Image 1 (tube, rainbow, N blue to C red):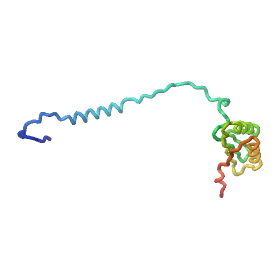
Image 2: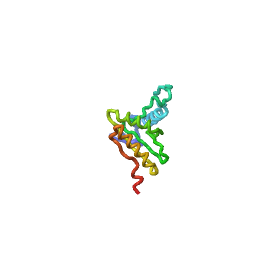
Image 3: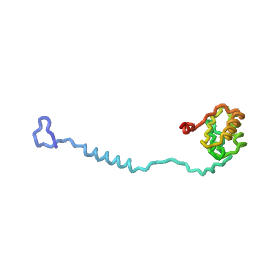
Image 4: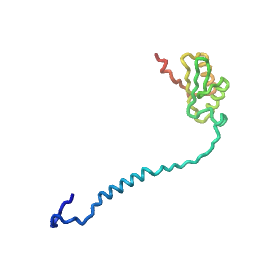
Length: 140
C-alpha cells in the first residue's frame, strides 16, 4: 500500500525501500537465537566428606527445643537424650555469651514429674530464657 505525497504523479514508484519487514525478520531471528543459547552455569564439583556427629554443634545459639513425649523420653533439638546429656547441653547453652532461648514442648500425656525435672535442670544450669511451645493446642 503506497501513499502519494507531494507533487509526484500517481503511479510513479516510491524511491524509499520499506524496511519494516526486514526489521521484523531480524527481531524474530534475534529472539530465536536468545532462546536456543544454552544457559551457562558455573559450578565447581567437590566431593565433601559426610557430616559427622562430632562436627555438628548440639547447642544452637538462637534457640534450643526440648520435647518430652508420653513415654518420658526427652529430646534435645529432635535427638533423644538422657538426663545427664541434657544437663550438659543446658550448661553449654547457659555458658554462651548470648544465652539462647529454651523452648519446652511437652506432649499432653507427658508425666508432670519428668517435665518438672527438666525445668529444675534448666534452672540449675542457669537458663534464664525459657518458654513453652504448643500450649494453644491444650486450650480446650
